[in-house]
Image (cartoon, rainbow, N blue to C red; front, top):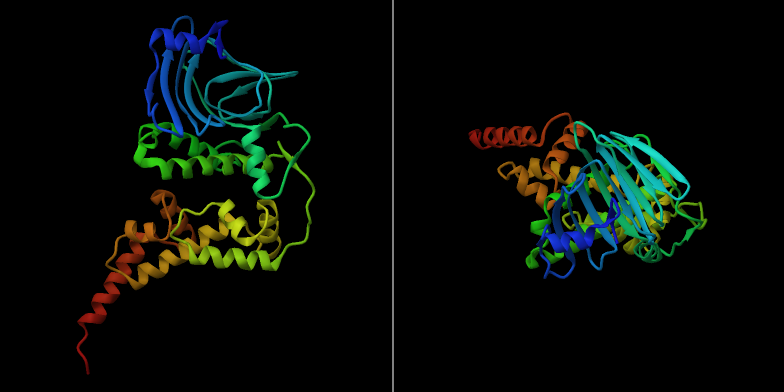
Amino acid sequence: MIEIYGRNLEEDIVRSGLVAAYGSHTEGLRALRFSDRQEGYFAANGGLFGDGHVSVTDALASNCIFRMPDSEIIRYEKVARGTMGIDHGTDSFDACSGAAVIVGPGAVSLRMQTTSHRMRGIATTISTERLDQFLLQGNERRIGPVEFTLIEKSGAKGPDGPLISLTEHASAHLDYYSLETSEQQRRLLEALIVETFVQLLLATNAVKLCPERIEGSAKVVRRAQEFVCQNLGAPLTISDIAREAEASIRYLQLSFKQILGCTPRAFLAAQRLEAAREMFLARPFSTVTEIAGECGIAHLSRFAHEYRRRYGELPSATLRRSQAGRRETSGRKPN
């Protein structure tokens, strides 16, 4: 049950016909959009993935109190604009624009005040059951409770940057992911959200794991490197790499950090950049989009930014130089 000012919001939504359901008959995603103006204002665009253990929401609100019941749900709440009060057990915090918090299982209240601009919030949730399933795949388990955590440097360059991007992307493209033909993409997106959320929980110490070995493993890194280099064009996740390396995600990260001085994700990104550059030079009349797709690169704008930072020029500039060199070579007359 979800309440706004003591009213059962879910019952009101159904009774008032405020829900526009997309993909309600599609297994794996229940997407909904609605707005409520009876007392305050609350409008949401979000979806429940799989059996409801993972959700994303992008919402606007003003002058309302949003109450979630006691449940085994871990919430990430980002205030993109305005101010929001958060109550969870004995913890209470007023989050201003740019702040983000992680709150563990239990009842949660979100207080949105009346302002000249509606508060915008981005939220992602994961059940403790889904979290524990994910950790179990890496032979890991949690210890102690989930800590109420304030993320001070929240944003694109903060530890929650990847989760923000995924949540905004998922919320904006629910129509697409609700299609029956998008089942593979939907499952991949859900897996990415879970993996990214777990990494944020570990990076912020909101969740602690049982102690592991602290020495890195050269064999683990070597197996991971071989798998990555042979599958650059595939939509790889850190879970995939850890499985092939025969290690837990945590141990894989530790091994990479100690032996290579970087994370598995950074290694994967660097290999894709290097492969793309080699293709630009070898195939000058291909397009940036074609080569990026073959290298498993999905976000072209981010790719262009990272490529320029690494090589000092945009991918298109490398292609133009390569094309010019090829034309010059082909135009020369043999001696």
